[in-house]
Length: 113
Image (tube, rainbow, N blue to C red; front, side, top):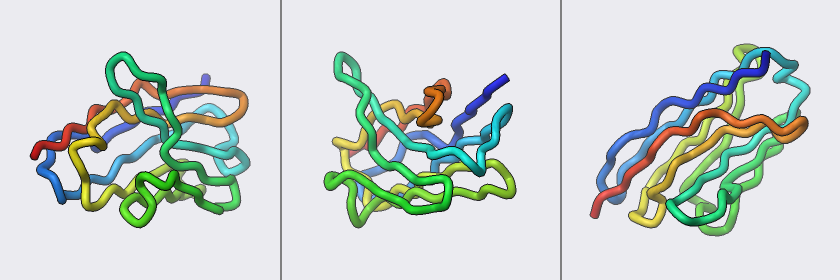
């Protein structure tokens, strides 16, 4: 059974940092592309960062230079390091297995001004 469990969200002041984690199980994590998405109320869920199974990362322009995606294939973990957080980064963040598509339950990130 595929499981993706996010953790690390919370409330942080603008300019602060958070590190999100996603514990994966039930599939060959080391052979699977993974991503982080985020969603705000009433809006579509959008990709923030993507990483290939081999470790090649990519982030959207809005977070470039502030967010880093990484993975630990030995321990089936996906990470999102978020620095210099802005109010507009407030969202529920989801871990996603690209294919076949699977989602975690999400973790709330709230950035206060």
